[in-house]
Image (cartoon, rainbow, N blue to C red; front, side, top):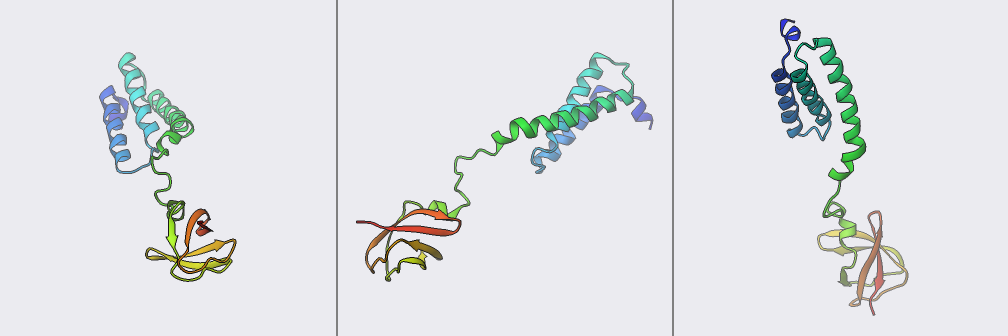
Length: 149
């Protein structure tokens, strides 16, 4: 408890780097607010060296809460942007692809082998073997096909 009575700015800087290191291990942004709050307390303690440790802890607690909420509200959306939003959606990746049918495709729902996967597909009309169809969309994991003319 002696260390709590004599907290100095460098103690908070160490805590800042501990939080940043833990964040780098994969906390998903959860510890960034606490790391920023530790930096704020360190700066305030550098400006006001005789600040008591309960005040430091209150500032750290409130700062952690407010800065974490600010991160989740303002900056989280920036981290979720992707250059390839369809990266993990295989059905969306097939939209626009043209396929030559190896078997007749009946109207309505059926199944079709595309690559190494058997897909559930839907076509508004029957398409004969050897015709070309293109994937026009998807509803979940079901592909919507249209005959190319």
